[in-house]
Image (cartoon, rainbow, N blue to C red):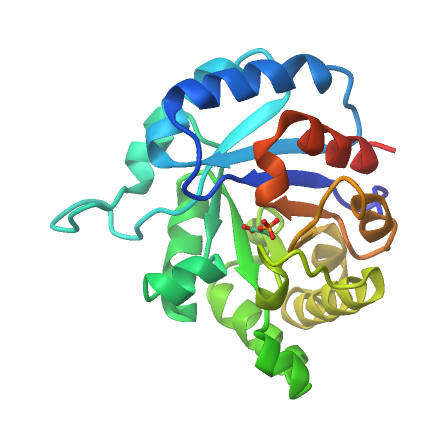
Length: 256
Ligand code: PEP
């Protein structure tokens, strides 16, 4: 973390977990635990059907609510999809875009990620843009090329004045939901590479202001070490964000 230049952000990604009643219970349990948190922003990205409940439950706290996806078209014949305007009315502040599970199971590409990022920014949301290499790409030592390409295409035609609202989440696919974490040095190396790529695209001032999270089996035990690295500005957390005490422990690590 480097709080001099950028915000530390801890975001939960609930994936396809939690009903509305479970959402209410979880946020009510979390709220008093994070009352005194000063140094990091807290976000919960929840399933569409939980958003209204989550926004209501988080009211009066410092927890912001986000969506896990959205469509780039404003409306139309896209059965099962949700638009930015719909999400705006529900009160979200963040939206996860290009999660590897959406790329793998739902045909998300770098190009659709780019369209969504632009619509999210136009709608006043902070997009959390997920990038990361597969196990094969890591083993072939092409992670740098892969991640740079994902970042460049995701941010195509995003102007410098908007890019500071973007959060990048570096999520190595081999570490998501597997219990296998990147070492703190590996995570920092890739986050620093992403920042260097951003520097090339937008200049040093913008690059140092952008929050770059690590995600992939981050938990209460490994969070402090990962977050101690200068280019790791927070976390995108799946499994551990479903339990108030575990999520709180990660937030505390980021709040030091
Ligand atoms: C994620 O879903 O973005 C994620 C990082 O999951 P987990 O923390 O469970 O690996």
